[in-house]
Image (tube, rainbow, N blue to C red):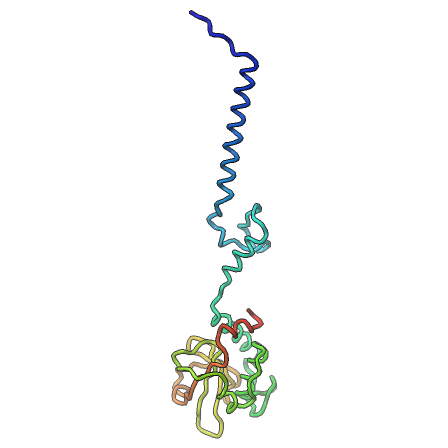
Length: 210
């Protein structure tokens, strides 16, 4: 049998260097590929301090931007939630003609106060003035924040604010500040018109809850 020559020390070193170089090149290639792919749950990550799921290798701006994208709530929903918060504040306040406070309030004063406090928008004090604000819309077009007017028996017209799903916020002469259904036989019978003082997108931007 012919004896094979033993590899020299130099040859062993060269082979070792080539092997390590190939190994590191492979690791670097894998790391580079992974860094270019967003994790599957990238757009569902919470803000720091708001729960698990944060990738510590991401920059602080990445999860914040992802979280903001998840907060693209439709404007009518933003407006409705702001109006429901106002309802909690005013609920049960008795009706008083000419009243403007939580001791007693009439329908047009409630509408004016809610618009001022929620949207920083001043409306006229009276129903006769409010019915000329914005533009008239069809009842089927109603969105949260629109004004709904009624012409019941008696000297005065009535006004409320539509909150969505067929309901409106108003100061009822018999029950004070409540939320009522437009499909109620009384309100359906005396419905007059609806008006949009400002587009829902603008109301949402003005809302303190936006």
